[in-house]
Image 1 (cartoon, rainbow, N blue to C red):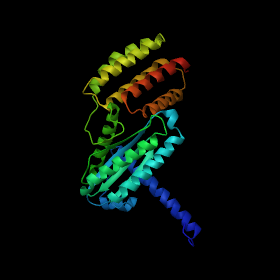
Image 2: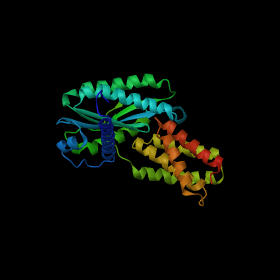
Image 3: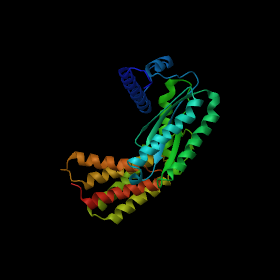
Image 4: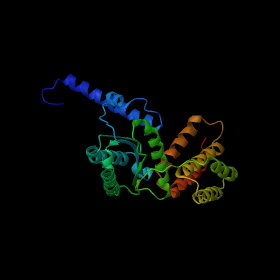
Amino acid sequence: MRRGEDPELGKMKGRLDRQLLKARAELLDFLFSEGEPGAALSRLNADYCYKMRSGSFQLGLVKIDGEYDVLYPDALLDLRTRCAELLRDKMVPLCYDFEVFFEQSTGKMLLNYPGGNRGPLRSALEEVLETMEIRGRFYRGTEFTIALGGEKDTPEGLPQSARLAKDTLAQRIYGQAGTLMDPLDVAIHSSLNSRMLALAVPKLKKALQQKDMQAVKETVDELEKEAVHTPELTGNDLTFLAGEMYRFALFYAVPSESDPSVTQALNESYEERANLCSNHTCLFRKLKAGIVELVAEEVG
């Protein structure tokens, strides 16, 4: 608050600022759910106090990956705060408008910039990654990735940009973590996923019934090997397969009379850890560890 300013006015301004930030965060959440903006550029500027202009519109994602026990809770907060500061310092001078909000280990970005700034903008994002890589060395195994969605001429194209950013980020588990990733147009191959699960799930069920942890690990290893060496499959597919295998394990390992909240909490805990994996080796290692832990603790 500035000297001489009415304290009540300062409090009101603070509340309005917080409400505006909340509304902007909700708009980004909505866009990343691939919802249509539903308003002209002038209306978006008026409703959310943006300064966007005609030019290029783009969404992007920033991902912090690492070990859960290393990152939560303090390290992740430190890294998110520093990353957001760096992004604003680098992006604001190059953009008509820029916004970034973090939720857990993922940051969502909205960029509006002159088309001629495409090159400098990429260089600035790479500088952010380089700086964060240095900071991340204080936290063992931490990696940073930026995935860009498609560049669009109007805000109406932002939902498609969001889809591309999400699909592109998922591809980092094929060895692209720690880089600035350009948009990739990929799709989930549901028929291949279904075929692989149809082969793997009966083996998993049998292993769990016999409490044969070696067989559990071998089943997961076989699934990973087949999935990784199937060229058509994407990062989204691998994440889906691992998640489904864990949910099947929950179904078979947790007694049916158990409180549903127990199953939900276990699944959320697994997803939280799996979401921090920057490569498929980590993803399937977390899957094996999660299933073994289910059996070892005899959850009920």
